[in-house]
Each structure stands twice: as structure tokens, then as C-alpha cells.
Length: 316
Image (cartoon, rainbow, N blue to C red; front, side):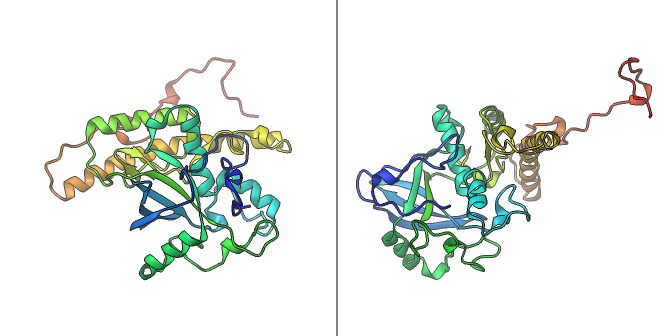
């Protein structure tokens, strides 16, 4: 299920393997060589480190081997020990795959400017893994589970590759290193709203919009993103899907899409509230996806509306 240890450069193919956009491996221009400079922090799905590669500074996001319930759409009816079933979900919904697909879409369509720059994926070799664990041993880094329940299960070793009893390599993505927690300004926030719209037009939804995930004013985290084609947005991927399920999937797609705009408005509200609480003199931001940032609260006075006879509701 997970990417296996590469035996040569030929094994480093674009990922994930399912239909749709893919992310290419990072080009080390030779053997893998990474200098680990600092530990930047962790999130639900990954650890982030400041690194130097080929004389350049990057952010390296190293993904955990997460719990199944952290994957989108993987419910209680899927046997977690069923390799075939889990692999199908992995390709579309596991956080590393989600991020590969989103960045892959931006690169393939020539719209990398809509997010913090991504330079490719990495399968950390054993030597570099030992360096990470030794250099940051005081942090007790664990790659099993998530930030809330770390290390309870050996998820990494659940599915080994090529018939060898060897846990798969740690997966990472090399990204632009830049300032975080920057001030929000009206001009940038207005541009960010346009970026959300353009990302959705490119088939990337459920972006997890938030101030915490901005680097240089651009989105950098797509570990929950849904990128078409996807089994939720593209029913054709499942030929056994009954017609009664199509409306449910369409509704889910709508919910995930509109959630990006709800989160955008929540980000603006939280920023304004924080500045007011701290009594700063920063100008209040009034850019919202919905009028006043209050969502779809349009009122219809249907009692006084005369419906045409062909559409009037009739009780049966």
C-alpha cells in the first residue's frame, strides 16, 4: 500500500499511482543528501523540519502513518487488514496522497502560484531517518498515529512491501521555506479569496483554509484536499455504485466545497477578534466570502410568494 523502498531511480515514479494528478520525486541530482537544521513543529498528519539540500533552504514535511479514521471516507465498514480495500482508499484519501495530488494538479496545469511552492516528494532513506531520530531524540518523534494519539499502534509495519519484513520508508514532501504567522492585510486577504475560487475551479476542494497554514501569504497544506478525479466527486470511478447514491455524493461534494468559504470567513473573524482582544491598531479586515461573513443567511418570504401552478407543492 505505501511506497516501497526504491532499488534504483527508476522506482521513483510520480505518486500516487491512481488515475489523476501526480507529484514527481525531488531531484537530488545524485544520492539523497539532506542536512537537518531545525524542527519546526508538528500537525495532525506530519512533522515539519527546516532542511538544506543542494545549498538551498526548504521545509520538509515528513508524514505520519496515520490512523484509518483520519482518512476521508474510510468508515467502519472497511476491514483495516484488507490490503486491496485499504490501498484503494490510500491512493485518494491518505494525507500524503492528498497532498501529492493537489500539488500535482497545480504543477500539471501551470498554476503553482496559487500555493506555496512544492519541489517534489521524498522517500527518506534509512541513514537520513537515523539522523532525524538521533538529532531530535529529545522531542521523541513518532511517525505512527497522529498528533493526538501518537504511537499507540505500529501502523507503519501493517503492510510491508515486496514480501520482505521491512517497514516502508518515511514519506515526505519538500516545500518552500518562508515566513509564517504573517499579519493579514485586506489586499492579501482579497487575493486569498480569489485563490480559493481558482483552486476549486482547478478541481481542488476541502482546502482546510486557515491562517495557520499560510507560508508567505499562500496556502501550503493540502493533506485533506480532495482533487478530482476522486471517488467522492467522480462516481464513474465506482461502476458498482447504485444510482440512489449519486445525490448523496453530489451533496458531499457541495458540503466540502462550501466548507472552504465558511473556513475563510472564520479565519477573517478570528483574526479581527484577536486584534481587538490585543487592542492593536491594525485595520479591521472586511473581506468575506459571504455577506458579512455570516454564511448563506438569505431570507425568503415564501408565504407571500405565488408559485406557478406547475411547480406548486401538492400534498399526496
